[in-house]
Structures are given as C-alpha cells and as structure tokens.
Image: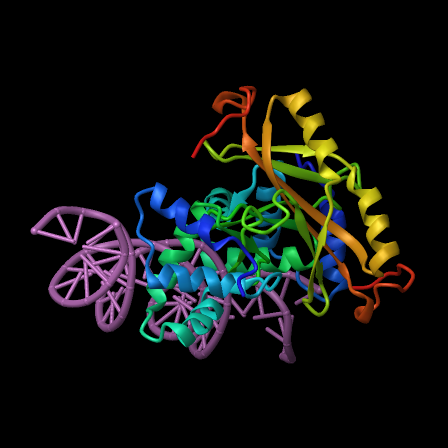
Length: 157
Length: 157
DNA sequence: GTCCATGCAAATGATTTGCAGTATC
DNA sequence: GATACTGCAAATCATTTGCATGGAC
C-alpha cells in the first residue's frame, strides 16, 4: 500500500530519540499515498482525519515541520499562499532522483518532470565559487498544451 | 542614477491607462537602486520613506503587486516568510538574461549567478510535452565557502 | 514513571481590503 | 472634473505557540 519505505522513516525517528506516534505515521502515509500531488497542510489534515479523526491541525503543522527537517517529506512553494508537501525523494524507491515542476501560468496546472541536467551546472558552480550544492529546485513557468503551449510565441499581456 | 530604464516603465504604465504617481516611481526606484538585493516589502517601505515619507505600507504592497504583474519587478521566495523583490530582468540593460540563486542552508546567505544552461532543457520539454516555457526559476541549496562549501562531503544533520 | 507529543484555543504576522480623502490625467 | 490612487485602520488567513493532558518507551 505504501509507496515509500515506511520502516526507514520509523528507524530514523527512533534513531533521533523521537517517538513514532499514530499521528506521525498517519501524516507520512497520507502524503506517501498521493505521490506527485503537492498537498497543502489543510489537504493533509483532511486526508489524515479519515484514519485519525481526533488529530488537530496544529499537530499536522508540527508533524509536517518535523518530517520536513528529517527530509522524509519535501516542501514546495508555488507562491499561491500555501506551502505544499510531497513524499521525500530519499524515501521513494529510486533514491536520488530529482524532479521539478512545470507550472502553467494560465490555468495553474502543475506537471512534474525528472531531469538531472543540472549536475553539470552544479559542478561548474563548485569549481568557480566554492559553493557546495547539495540540492536544487527548478520551476519552469509557461503555458501547458491546453492553454496554448504549442502555439507560436506571440505578444500577450 | 537609475540602474534601469525608468522611461520604459512609465510608458508601460500609461499605455495600460494607469497613473504614474510619486509613490510608484519611488518604489520602482528603491528596488532599482538595490540590484541583486532581494528586498522585502518592509525593506522597500523603509527605503521609500526617505523620498516619500507619507507613503503607507499598504501602498507599497499594492504597488509591488502592480509592478510585479507588469513584470517591471521580479518576485522571489526564499521560504523564509517574506516574499522578496528585485528589479525586473526586462528593465535591466542586458535584456534577456537569467539569473538564479545559490542559497546557503547554514548561514542563509544568497548569491546570484547567471546561466542559460536551461535553454536546452526548455527545448527538450517543449518537444516532449508541448509545454511552452516562458520563464524559469532555479534555486540551488548548499554550503557557501564560509560555511564549509569546499569541505569534502560528509554526513551532517 | 518520564518526557515527548498532542489538542485546543489564542496569538502571530505578513499581506489584503474597505473607505473616505487626494492627486493624476 | 472624473476616477484611479493613497493612507489609515481593520480584517484575513496560513501558520505558530502556550499550556494542560495524554501516550510512547
């Protein structure tokens, strides 16, 4: 059922001296059950209430923050007023894979894609600036097919 | 004094039937006077008050939103609780140049860099998905030189 | 049994909005 | 002079926090 390594997550919590609670498990499962869905805290709250009806929204926020700091979930921000979350790439089967987002500026649709093209860039930056890159986030804005993505570029307001 | 094309901005406002006010000019100049500085609304407010002491914070917010929608300024979000702004790339001399950000996850320092490496990726995406990319945003997270950027990679929390 | 974790309600804080007065075109 | 813009204060709303109770180990 789970699309991610649940045991690994519990291990990590225990190793840090943190407790494996019903709420934490439920939040992680809710997010893991919706890969690529970019859930808001409120959406996670609604999903979790199914299995865990007494959970409070504050607990969802606290749990989200904890899981985020452990990199069990990833934070994404589409600048629409909500921070969103998805299962951490470290927990998903393939291990290190980077996925990024295409955001349609007309309809708001978000499409995920994978690409490791930035590794070359990261090496270049390390060489020229001494900055050691450990993660990256790429957002591409444009028009999806339904909103005129394949039209010839033209002036538009 | 201005590091950007002020006339172009005023033209654009007028063309849209909008008014060129003291406040709008002052906000744009404040942001333009601090290239690469990623100002928050509050910081812009403080800067603008020098030339325009009676301006209200609400006007700054409204102006920022307006200038952003006209692409006269660019919005950036470093997920620290503030939306930040910088002069729009369209207004700066060189025209189309993309700049992105290196964010140190230890000290928070932000370094800008330029690179057009993503153009190849954009073409690839257009070809495979039909999505027409018109803009992109790249954030690279890691450790700056002062925070151990040039150390060998090791386990850290 | 010890503390960490939770639920609730209240607090926070960036941003938005209503409205009456003001300034641009 | 019409009406878009501004300043002020109040409202909004996602997120955080204080505190007393509850649960994991």
